[in-house]
Image: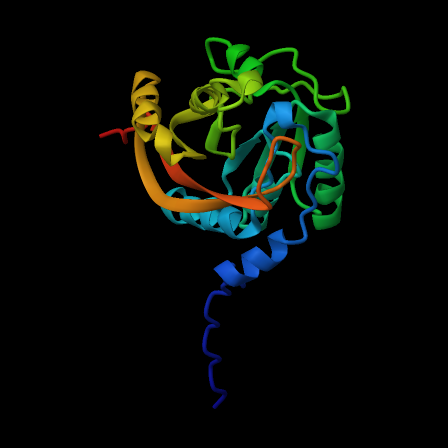
Length: 253
């Protein structure tokens, strides 16, 4: 008698393990930043360790895998590239500064990740969103694609905005947070850094914008001496790591 063959178990595709903190920090250390930062834009690079903590927290809470992500005020693109490394379906990285986008483009090419670059003012991008949340007529950094359905479409928005303490950037911290909420889909979340000293103000403004805000962690942000007005070799600034969820994302019965 011929023995019958046992049916094979269904093949389970191999899923690579999720990136650990140390590994992610190591990857993000390879992301280049501005060659000539601009003080009027309060351009301070997000340290790889802080970027990694932000990304892993966002992944644990909202899930970066297959998500549509925006990186606002992207600089060299460390947050957007990190999101892509953690499995984001696509990332739109936005910055007003062409020099920053040049560096970001080099980084995206080096890491070979699904990140598109958009040369645009973050606040203007959000303000141009129509009734359905889609901005119109906004060209990317190379003058090509329209931003399409950017507004109101993102699952997760990441940012390290200007602190808004300089005369040239006064209020930019709140403006970025509000823009991020507008670009989120209902139920989507903004992850952002703000000075701890502004906590009550940020909480108030987030609520006014229809967001549900909570401080995920208190961090120390090291700012090296980069500009003429800096007097010390470096300075630690107390910052809050915020999660602000846009309303309207409740599950249907």
